[in-house]
Image (cartoon, rainbow, N blue to C red; front, top):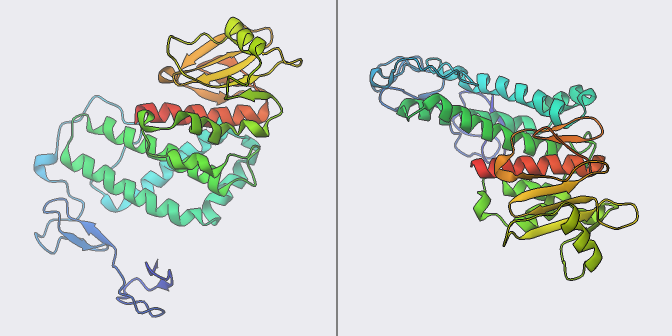
Length: 318
């Protein structure tokens, strides 16, 4: 079954027009790997050249690479590519739950995946990814498996953000504003980093003191932050400073600049991580680990920080 692209009425698979609004129904097609002719989805052979649908042209067939794909795909079975990619997405969904959210809510997240309106978006997007993967493979770009893996990995992360932020706020432990989704597909150098940090962290909603206008920040606090943990490079623009001390001295806390995260926790040495060096950000109970380093700004801020840092990591890899 499929739906009308205009009024979304459910149509029979062979319907040529929508019985509800009268619009012409677009029949699902599949592209021949030999001549690129579009054929009906259930076609076994191409109506133009007679080749078996899903057959890879001889000139595109290459020797096996030593690279071990993260998401191996069978390009000879084009019809199953979308289903295979959906299976890989569910695996990545489980990883996101384990690394960022509460694993006890896994069943609820899976129910949302299968029963919410996201299912339509999910199917459409994974079918698009299948077509993109097939196109990359058919063109035999250099390091094709690595290219497909990178494309799928980045796309999965974006789709996961959309799922958790748009469809799972009733399950999530912390509210992540939908404004965070507007940065999908934006390169690091093109982003308004100050606004991005505000959209993700929503510092005005937290109990800790935070500062983005440093002319209004008490001078002693600013000096203490600079003495104890905030050591930016020359001309490195500071975006936000958050004071985590009980009495407001700002000797402990964190700061984000246009290049790095700086922080100092209680009884811990000062730390910093450049965004370009981010590798692993994961939940570790009552704190998070950033490239294995301890960070704790409280449950709500920790969750928002994980999403923010993962976004910055992906933007730099984009």
